[in-house]
Length: 115
Length: 111
Image (cartoon, rainbow over all chains, first blue to last red):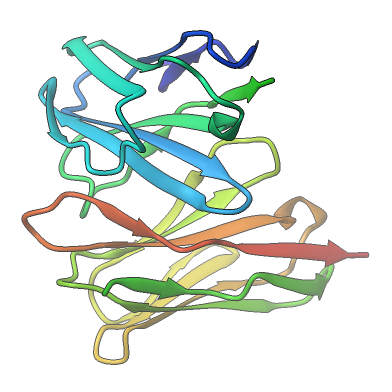
């Protein structure tokens, strides 16, 4: 398997623009996680899905963030409108079983810069 | 509350041994993970402990004491490529499938 795939790898945009990040999990994995990583706050869980259904979105910062998983092989994280404080590396991860007791495999990340 | 503590930064010499500690306080326990993250890259899985004791995997070993809420990662025969951040993560409540992540320990290897 190719591992978790994310696109784009880098995104530079201006404040107020819409940003869409994409993720393809490892085939057969039932859990998909979206994380954000910054120097100040470390790795933060934003939202996770089980079998395409959002289970916990309590980590989503505010209504400007939304995530979808229309099928087992694709998920998006959207920020609209984007703000400079959203600048971070966004990781997608997937696991076969529950995240609390199973290994999560991370994608390469999307480095987002909002000017 | 739920909390994971690990040192911010450590320095060690090539060829030596280093121990990175992690203490945790969580609601429930479903295992402890160590991940390695090189600068500019994604975290990658190193080890998983769910029972007390030492798990050895090549140059890396991980220890767990559930009664003390304590774990350590032991790296032997350090190589320059071991320079990275090491993240401790704990599986929390059984009904909430989230990992609780530590802030990571940046390990600097000097020649």
